[in-house]
Length: 331
Length: 286
Image (tube, rainbow over all chains, first blue to last red; front, side, top):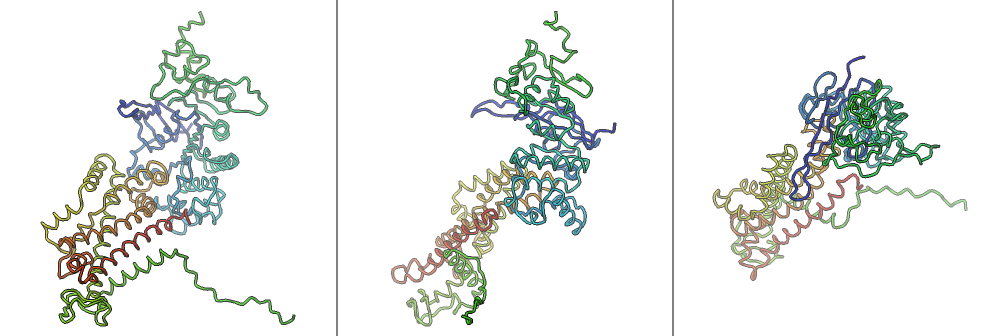
């Protein structure tokens, strides 16, 4: 196996939040010890409910936010600090797709100059080559030259996201982070954009971090999937395998919540309670207050992410053989 | 029947000017006129602004030799008005540009560096906002005497805190999420982000506040001149004319009426233009 393109080792990102007017600042661990690797051309999907730290993970991996602990290495070298010249040069190799394409585009500039901007910034090609590249990119994402002359607000949501995609691909990056790229789009448009992403990823050999809360989309796009809960990865594995045989109770609940035609909804695992507050993290396994299979030990012992099968990792005491030696129920 | 011609008479297509609201057209004409007058002041003024005509002191407006009458020394009011417009416009334009540049730059610096820089800029802005500007201007002019460049620079300090606050607020909002963050993420240098993206996006707001500050600068200069601390005689400005014409308000009201009306119309016209520009400069409203 070749060396991974992106390797993320135990990154953490903490925020201080103040509650109320005179409240003491509370530390929120948005991301708390997340590790994974990504090879060139590979896609990793990250799923989780809102507040699980998946977007923050994407931002830290891209170096847009500093990691409070742990490290991110890109192509074997540590991530330079945000805003430095090295960091800026490196942007040509890693790009991001945003959730809100209208917000990510400058509404005062037509589409074509915005798609061209990365080429101007990184001084790639001469005047003619840049114009040709823009035309090529627009064509690639299914926009016409006429679309390039329009302003962002004159395009539909799907067209805007295509424009953002064209801009992100302008410098031929190796690594793309898609942060909920289709959440703001109509359902009818979502499939088009997802298919476009999959096609481009296959054609260009991009490594991709695909962040979404939509299991079906993640499954379609990614080979591997990581499930996040409260800033940690609770299960990771091959997409088909993970969705067919979820190990972690949280993954099971997620999978059963996704409607599948022809399946009765009666055997759905319904989670009770709200997603817990990251400022007030439950002891032991963070999922235990909502877990239908929680044992008394779940309140005390923090499960570690361990390999449960080849290429499959999960963080649950039920499957963690090493941590399960004094198992009361087995006696 | 055969004579009936179906040919549509070809009319010359009239030159299509953008249709302007009537108030905007009037404001445009007025401001344009003022600028022309200011530029050509020496050529169109019938007399020098200090030229005395002692035989025709305090003559009424409408006389063939002096259309707007003369003042107590027999100086032609029209000539003085023209020179005053030039001086007042130089001060108002210069000061507005200085304060817009200064304020926007400081606002961007605050938004970019945050932390201590931001605190210092905001503190200066609060200081400026809480200090009556007139008193500060009086102090500066009393100590440093009075020259036109000094007056322009002093006026340039007026209103900068508004640009600074606007620029900082909008730049922070754009930077935390949205287009500026996206462009930064593309690898753009901070200069590019601010000059190419944030500045054009907030320009309409800044231009509107410029058109708000512009009349205030004219009024401020008039006030200082009225108090005798602005433009010094024999040089003249609109406020200066009003100030010195005040003594003759009952006997010769025309001396102060014409500059006063000029102040009113110019400030009004600039405000109307600013309001209209804000809408026109936004491509999403087109």
